[in-house]
Length: 231
Image (cartoon, rainbow, N blue to C red; front, side, top):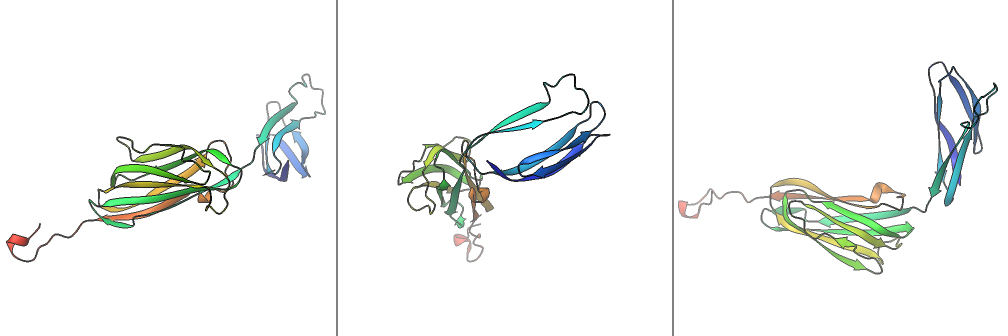
């Protein structure tokens, strides 16, 4: 169930020594030290088979041990199918203050596991006012629970998104539209993310996407006569 094992580090406490070695999937070695000493060995590998895995470590002592009940310890790990959620974001790149702004967010699931609890979060900078979130689902994907508007906050979310496997993202996907008004001048980045609480992510590099936007104002008119000047 676990492949590609390697010993990452070995850390004995003061006065102790330990020499672990790896043979296949078995770590063995010797440990020597005074009373109260420890040795921490970190081993890592790749989960390759689904299911419950029990990993047991055992200490065998040469001297007489008055209590062997604590000479073995186990950890259970449930290996579940992961998936690769993806998100893309496009939208307004340049706009004048007071004009409408909109962003399009697309989320899909590259697989191999279906997801029913995906969460999309878009933290819109305060340069935009009146932020509103809408959704359209394509194929058998669903929008989940959408929060269109939240008073006092520019963060918009959708929870419980259902995303069947669609490697290309052209059959079963969800499209969110974020709209508002350009309010405060400046250049900012609007970032959206997609995640799942229950299904492990196999590639987080495509879980976030951003769109840069610049808000400007028209320069004041300082030419002509006083009747047509706008300062």
